[in-house]
Image 1 (cartoon, rainbow, N blue to C red):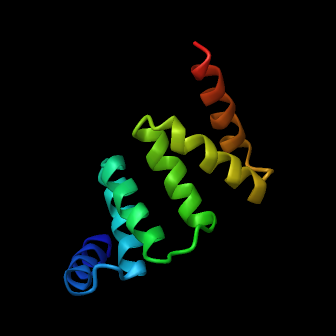
Image 2 (image 1 turned 90 degrees about the vertical axis):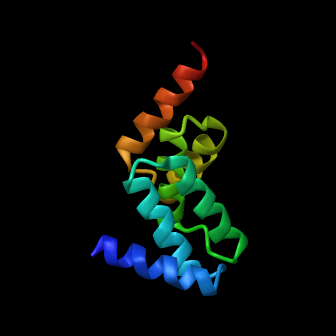
Length: 104
């Protein structure tokens, strides 16, 4: 199913480069393919095209930013996520670890 979604998203974006569902799908696909920088590029396009920064997109931004070693993006995404999901202990620990790593 992911490969099919990817193929369809590519076709749709060829004709409609601001199609937000396809941009989000491609960001998720890029992250699953271990390409966090590319995921962030698609996520940026998604947001510029009017996509909403909800919990799903914030988690995607946090994961991609953390994997791409982009603390400048990961920390604000984590802080926003903790505002939405304050009980997410895994996120809380990862965010704290980032802060510790920044002081090394």
